[in-house]
Image 1 (cartoon, rainbow, N blue to C red):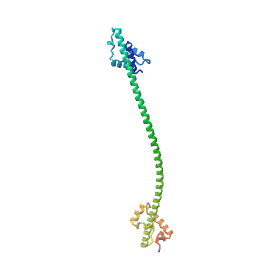
Image 2 (image 1 turned 180 degrees about the vertical axis):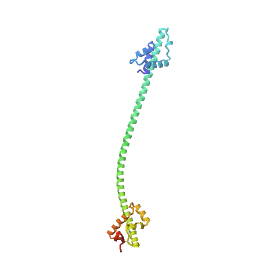
Image 3 (image 1 turned 60 degrees about the horizontal axis):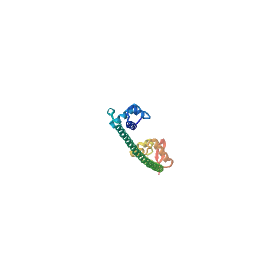
Length: 230
């Protein structure tokens, strides 16, 4: 598909040679021919730019006038070609400059990317190290917290046993079922906080442990417990 520039050059050359730049002659002068539609479009643009009207083309010109006209047309064609060549050279130089700038920008960006990647690797390494250290700290804290919870729970259960021992000293032998409703409301709420609600079964289990170790209680008949004598 011929460009407008090619059609303009061919039409100028035909006119300089004293030939009428018709659609047929222009297409014949173009090596690739080109579609009539595209060539016609560019030829109309050429006629408009050159103010060319075949109807006004003189037919009774002398040989000298024709030669001068042909020389003028040739000079115009040469000037147009020089201008086109200069414009092409300027555009090519600008394109080369832009390409060089783009290459510099690309190298700069690649350098920044490499630097950021290196920093990212270093940050990831530090984050992994910090995470590992944090995991060890969390594990130690969890262990300490667990031990504290056990200590608090054991201390609470011992207070409950002391409260039961005081109750038995006052009321005499009782079963765990009889003891449970006599405990203070604060004691029952405390058991809930320690995630070990007090039941008759729980009381019996804890009291049997104290009996085994000879603390607070002595077993009696019918599942009752009495305060251990001092």
